Length: 88
Image (tube, rainbow, N blue to C red; front, side, top):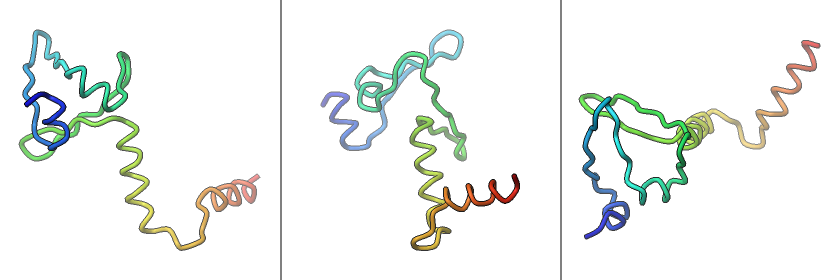
């Protein structure tokens, strides 16, 4: 089984912490996520472990969370712009 099989099955991938606390993310994972050198990732502490994610994925999760508070047919952008116009 190669690393791509693990990705498809959502199984953990073992990596090693190198000098200076560096972690090498396997190329297959970087490519599948569209992560390139210089991109920022987020590391989130979850209980006794960590979760690493992209900034884009976190933004999508936040949007999905707040979507539950939006009324049908309501545009948050239009509401925001209207508030700014009132303030101006």
